[in-house]
Every structure is written in structure tokens, then in C-alpha cells.
Amino acid sequence: MGNGPGTLVEVAVGDDPAGWASIGFTVDDHGLCRVGAVRIRLVGADDERGRGIVGWTLAGCTITGQDIDGLPTADLDPSPGAGAGTVDRGRHANGVTQIDHLVVITPDLDRTTAAIEAAGIAARRTREAGHGRRQRFFRMGEVILEVVGPVARAGGGPATFWGFAFTVADIGATAEHLAGRIGEPKPAVQAGRRIATLRSGDEVSVPVAFMSAPGPGAPGRTGDAPR
Image 1 (cartoon, rainbow, N blue to C red):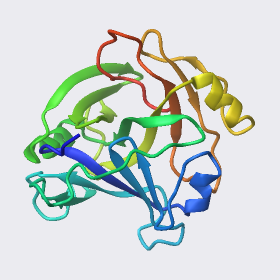
Image 2 (image 1 turned 180 degrees about the horizontal axis):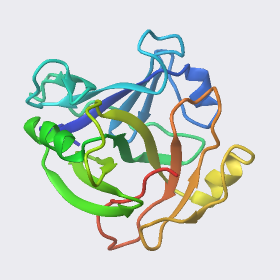
Image 3 (image 1 turned 180 degrees about the vertical axis):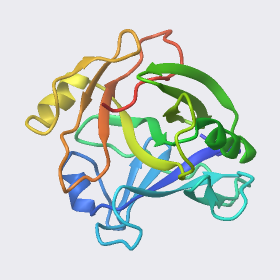
Image 4 (image 1 turned 135 degrees about the vertical axis):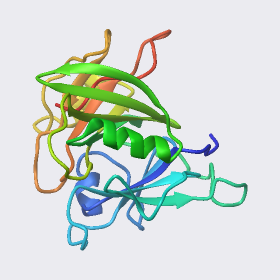
């Protein structure tokens, strides 16, 4: 799969590789975990940027400086020979096949939307999430970006990365593999899909959910944040 403008190429996470290996991800000797068409780079729990998701790399975006509304951003030249489309898809004991969506939270949904669109990534859909919140969705290659914010602006702070939802081949097998570390699978917002959430702990500092794959003919992936 090639890297068109706005494609998510890599996500940097402030965790040790061993933590992600403990929940069934295959991590190489360089701290790289290949999930579908995206690399997750595990930079260590003592990284100066802190824990959680600490940055991302996008292909061919028009960005000013090194962030998008506070989200630390690196830009990858999508031209041939610049590393586009060279990621090998990893095999993972937890059954993960790809990143379903990456979640960002913001106090000002329209401001963050404008910053993302200025980088060349158009908003696709907005959903009322209840409790005074909205979700806005963007396509970033294989991955959906879900931005969650209040209906009414709630301050001037930056947008921040929050968590992942991963697609798995068999949600029952994933739940069995991670028994004791994962909640019971339950119906997702999307009809016909199920979702289970990783229980929080020090080894993995990012909220993580696992989702069953969409059925044949299902609409595009939208609307299920890790809960």
C-alpha cells in the first residue's frame, strides 16, 4: 500500500518494548512493532517526551513547524525511494491485523479540525457522541483518525493523542490470549462488531481496545473509541 498525502506512517509511544510484547505484539530489536501498514515505534518509558503517544509521522502533509495543533508531527516525503510502502506487516500473537483508529482529544474540535485540514487531510464525517461531545473522522491511509471534542469550545489547550483501537482476526481468541488483562468483549457502536478494552497498567501507558473486523459489505470504520 503506497503512502499518499496524509497517510499515517508511524506512531511513537513512550513505552518499553517488553510491555507491548507482554500483550501479544511482535516487537523487533529496534523497538519497532509493525501493525498493518503502520509502524509503532516504542521509544522507552524514560523518553524525555513522557509516556503515552508522543508523536506521529505522516506522509506528504503540508505542515507548519513540527506540530498539528499541538500534536508533534514529522513529515515523510511520499516520493518513490523515500521509504513509502516499505513496511512489512507483522504477525502478532494477540491476533491484531491493523490499527482500526487512532484517537485524539481536543478542547476545541473546530480549531483542531482546521489544523488537520490545513495539513491536507479532509474531515469525512462528524458524529454526536453524547454527553456534550462530538467525534470527527479523517482518513489517513489504512487508519481512521478520530478526534473527540466538546460541542462547545472548552478552553485553549492543545490537542493531545489519546489511544488506539486495533482490528483483530478473532475477538474471542484475542480475549482468551489476554485473559486477565482484557475486559469481556461487548457490542461496539458499529453494528455487528465487538470491542474489548485492555485493562490499564504501567507496562502499556496508552488506552488500547481490540475490535472484531467489519463484516462483508460493512461501511467504513468509524465511531468506536476505546472505552
